[in-house]
Length: 112
Image (cartoon, rainbow, N blue to C red; front, side, top):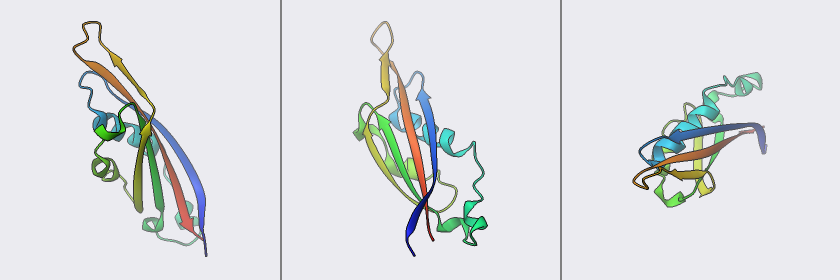
């Protein structure tokens, strides 16, 4: 058998006032995952925890994201997290704080 890409889910998340990159990344992945109920594993006779999920997060400063915190929200399967440059950081007028916008994708694969 071979791993086959079954699903691509996309999401966006923000931290409005705290410039917390992990919070924005977690919200982006939740946005991608929480609008779906995947039944693909069951449809092909596999348990839901057989899903392998590749998570990609885009933020301006990838090193500021706690990958373990992002991975912890996966409800099923096993996963990996890669953080790349992307998203936005928008400073407030005073320059004392900023809003962080993160983008996420979750690629779900099954061994079929």
